[in-house]
Length: 166
Image 1 (spheres, helix red, strand yellow):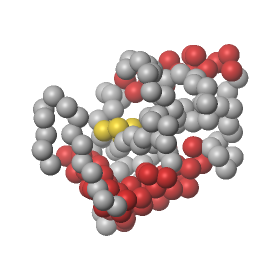
Image 2: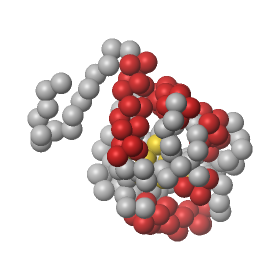
Image 3: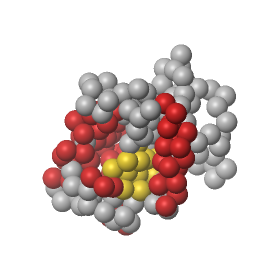
C-alpha cells in the first residue's frame, strides 16, 4: 500500500472475507494497545463479517470489557426490539457474543418523543466527547454514496441529528 500522508489511506481487498479479517485485526490491535478504546460502529451488510471476526477473536481471548461503543445511527421512530432496529441488529450480530459492558454500549435513541430529539442528539455528542472521542470509526459507503446516512454534500462538521432518508 502506498500512502500519501495528506490523504486518507485506502486499502482495497478483493473479497469481503479478507476485508473483515483485516478490519477485525486492526480493531483487536487497538484494543490490545488501548483496552478502553472507543469504537464507532455501523450496521449493514459490510460490518457483519467484521463482527463475526471480532466474536471469534473474543472467543480466542480478546478482552473487550473496557471498550466503549457508539453506534453511527438508528431509524426514527423505531422501538429497539423491532426487526429493523439497529439496536436489535447490533445485539443480534455482535454485543450478545462479547463482553462489552451494557453501560458502555451507546446507540442513538430511536423511540423518543420527536420534540426530545435535538436534546437527545446533543446528549449523544456530549457522551462521545466525555468518552474522549472516537478512537476508530468503521464506516461503509452505501449504494448512493452516502456514509452513515450522510448524503454527498453533507457538511464535514455535521453532528448527530435527524436525517430524512430519500
